Length: 193
Length: 193
Image (cartoon, rainbow over all chains, first blue to last red; front, side, top):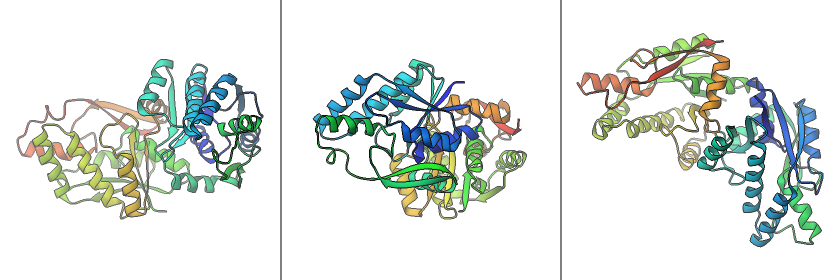
């Protein structure tokens, strides 16, 4: 079955990929892009370093612009980022039989509720998986055990999270970014241990 | 770290064990027993057939009798079974650093809420994992791919679920079982494919 893991190059989506790979799924790592900034590059490099197939799927830019407007209005990223994730899953659900992402137990957004998952699966005859059965301590332990990890202050060139293209649009529009996306340390997988 | 998977010999807990094993955890499969009936036997056989370490841990019988009273009063198993699961986790959390079970996305009971998980982990400096990131279709596919599975009508000798010792107590007390635990098909893992 056609199996994709939504992929950012971070620990969570890398672990989701490893679990499915070890369970004999022939996975494709997918990084979506809305055509405003090449934020897929770090994910592509990480996928290559782990030896997984990787694909960039271009999606409709209006998903990103709608989310960015929402984020500017809210002066807060959560609703906009969650909107992107839902749109991405809905679109990719039409291309794949199995879709997975690295959402873990503590994640608030992006996240699907139980009924949103059921609806996504039923509407698209899909199987959806994530890491909500696992907490951050366990994910950190497993990742430290499996992966070489680089930790840096988050910038436009070291992550493939949805946030990056939103940041790019905000910069273009001379919007302040620091309030909306405070500086944080970005963990990126850069290979096997 | 000391890692246990609560183990019934079914597909869910077997899959949880396989995932942790493939992620390099040195796991111990644990079947609890309250000393009223040897319901641990199927789990022990299955664990052996998969080549995993297995341990039977005897717990206080009053956990089982309290749950059984509740089940008789409710004429419905859910609260009693959930009570047993919480008590089991609370007790084993004191013996292990990592505890996992096979709870999957659709399971209603036994199940821990997000705050119950946080409380369990924080009170015991524990890492708890389950399969709530995965739905039944995916678990069935993976299990069919990995395991030889035997399907039979559920009876006292082909499962190590908590239900079995409760049934035994109900029988002893001449309580009707069929209303509380309707007949169902029991899937049991009997080896690798």
